[in-house]
Image 1 (spheres, helix red, strand yellow):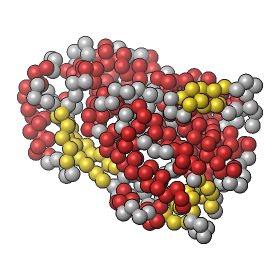
Image 2: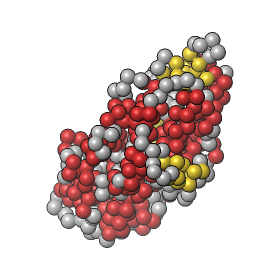
Image 3: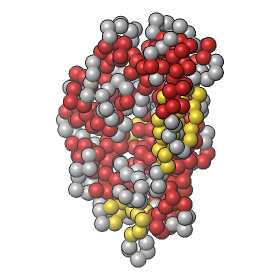
Image 4: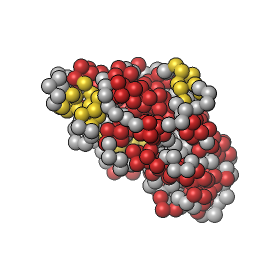
Length: 414
């Protein structure tokens, strides 16, 4: 593992100084694909609710890599053998795990590209960078894809107690000011060990795990699934779909070169050539913001008003309940806006729609968090905990929402 000729450190508001461990990681950080993450918000439109939530995927990647360094140090100190090649591969895998995110993080994969997840695009970026860096990422890719023989390495990158989750909970809690999401990441890492090639937590760390799972559940309800944030993200998804539809009909919309390409073309996973990937790498939050600022002057009622809503935070009203909304209730809301503005049913559906949100803090079915007891046996944390609500946290809670215009629909522009 080649070290840097000169120590490179970055000052992080969460952890203090973060050291860039190797030349490969430094070169990856300097690459334009990674630098793009400075322009991708970590939490999408959450800053509409929490004004401080302007941190980026770049911040998060650095933080997750820092925690991975701590995890490697802890495991090595407990006699777990990790080679220098495996160590660097772990750093690279966690460093690049989110590199495939599009503008505003999750909205892109539900609108402009055809059902392509950010994990799939991250893998494409990693494979492209692997060719550029003389196959230096081959082992990192195997770990990322869970194709390496030592399974606990993948669990550190992607699992129910991985470095990704530990960082984003702590970081998002800090930047939103939601203290309920605070987790003691370094205490949890200090309790990690490996048993039978699987990641485990030493028994005395049970209360830290409980706090982590409860914090995750609270962060989902209070932050990630906050109803105002849900409205904003859904409006953005619909805005991009409308722009794509208008472009397909021959309407020339002002947009950046990269955004125009994805508006004009239906791109599925199989279409992601190196050229398409390079075009995707030019997209960030600023493409969307600048496009919306131009689209508020559009002659299309839907595009104009969706853009205005997002730019001015004049959003739709949202109602949330435990049961799905009746089709009749949705139809009444749509008919009202259709009558007022002479819209088609399809156009009205951009302003009146339903959906659901799901919160499951812990899964007992796959890749469980296991405690290592003093007698050497392992047990699922939900079964070992004296907190009866941990098993309840493993149950998925689904809520349904309906979004529709507020009473002041006369503020909409024809």
